[in-house]
Length: 382
Image (cartoon, rainbow, N blue to C red; front, side, top):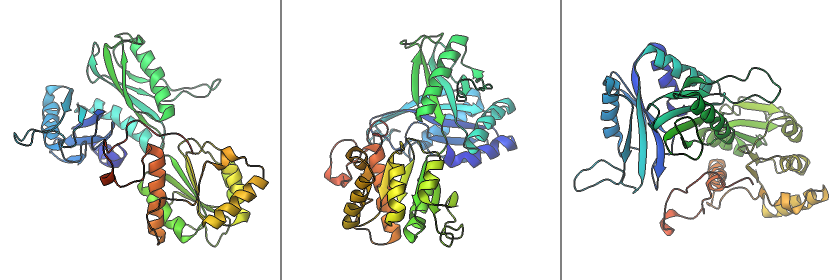
């Protein structure tokens, strides 16, 4: 959704009717994950993608029919039939796509409220009925609950058809939002658990994960660029005011001049945050890494030679860091790609972050067999 967010907001504000196709389920290998979207407006203009090109033509026709008043539909695409020119996926998987229209001003206003929250990096979940006893396309928008004792938790907007179903989906959507997960949930007609009467697709929009880059060097500039490209909210931090400048890091969302460990201890770090320490200076590294290893960060990568790494480990042990925590360090940082330039090194770092997140092997795909896309979500924290 984020990749076409400006286009969707423009259509809502300009009063342009459109249909939105959303991948709601993937079975086996497929080009796009659940949540990928494609929009077709009344003029026939297309933005976004649901399959990288395999089934877009057919989805376009379905979207035009839905926009003309055919009603919301869930369509499935499996393996293509090359000889019969059948529409489908060449990769061998199956995808299910929900197509629904935002044809009226009220529908676009409801969607615009969600798009505004996403644009402001505020967490929100959208639940949509796919099939079963409830009406296909019925929609519920859920915000996260505030901390216990804090008044003003926003209530859900819309309804899926019954109070019980709304309550159950609201509870589950908040749980999925906290984890950053998207997927189909099953319920009874009135929200009963362990029943298969109503399929509800819950799409969560959490704020972008953070990438914290410490050390305002040329490698940091390249790492900030690729982090931004991957969808991270990037912060570059360095204690030296001559180096930590906006001019040197125009792509970063934030440039901070502070001692690295002081900044890290005062900022928010969660289980999706990645930390890249590129300073390779003990007076910065040791207190910074000692602080980083106390956080739930998903990845902590540290630049330096093997000799520097061994010296750094000794200093951290002397500072009281145990072996369990030291094992979380990715050092020397990055995958072995033969990188030489700052840009190539940034690709190596990004590759290791992606590998860790999804559990890849780091080996050439041509040497492997089986599914190309790893199933499931992140493998844990490092």
